[in-house]
Image 1 (cartoon, helix red, strand yellow):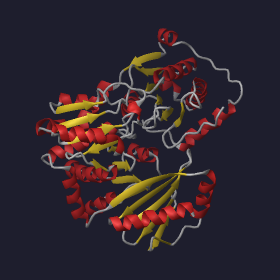
Image 2: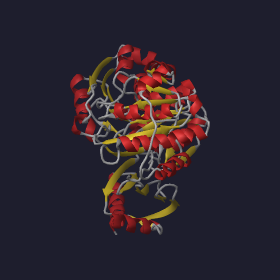
Image 3: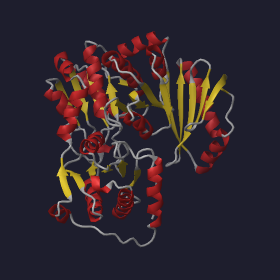
Image 4: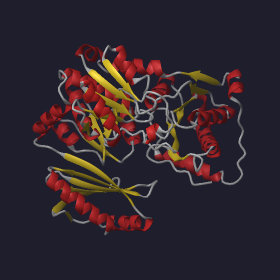
Length: 474
């Protein structure tokens, strides 16, 4: 059996290679034993799945193992967004959730997310215990399961649909009234994922002129990864322009990430959306608290926070760290550059549907102004533009090893600029005196190095990117 590891958001693998029915049973048994040991099994576990190939069948196996262990299972009746599952945990007071999804990964992948009783992703200290138990199952594995029908007859399996309570909750925290009265025209792209019938339905119920794209199940995701990236949202941008819409909104495969397109079809970086929404929430809600961002996320958030006197908390990459702060009611907003967001009083999990609704609310309050104009106004407020970029490098193992060793002794100048601070919270981050910075991170689950750069202009961006690439390959 291949080694099973939980990454920043669960365990993922290639279907029929390492993501197999046997491995799903093994991981579920390890989780079941953890739940019973911690006294969480009696609270019940939500089991959900996305629109990928065999996701429902994998979820059935999860339910069979859980119920055989005497754990009450709330089984979702249809493909369900991760944030809706998170809210269902909280609403029911459940002991957690197991969700079969590989989120934004390509179609050949599937995955398993394990959520805590808070609704947020399980923390590393929990998933490490599960990984250790999984490895103890190496060799012949004898598991016990009962059928779905038998579990239902025993009253230990209950079929649930989290859609209605989750959408009702969104209606409490988003001003749907101002969206409804704004006259916004919106194009929604669910990228064949779980947000179909959620995001589009919310706008339709609000009376917005709405066009939906890719709102049916396609396990191949149109031969592209269900990731709301600039490359994957070109069709959305075209439809926004063609229909004369004000906004294009997208979510990924399990609807925990967002993608935003302006009225002219331009993709707006998630980094910028996070900063704009922080300003919007502070002004419209008058909330108090901090803002949290991952180490790889734009410092434009910091500039907004300084303007409004808000503390900034920097976390490692992985929304579980931000989610823990939301659970403790310490944040106004928490976000990651990879298009993850949640807010005060909501779930401690990324919510792409909420993010899209908040952008629509922000635009409605701004009288349908273009997002690019709102961003330019923000740049003026904070003293100038901030450019941000991420580049992935797929490397041979020996190159990655050299890079890890190189980063143990980071340079004190890069691209002709003096390093004024170093941070090794997650990867190695080099900060310069003008506020620009560079971050090097090596993936723990794939042979990839990531280079993040934030600069004041394109010339500086090009210099830092070139210098960063040179260091990676040196």
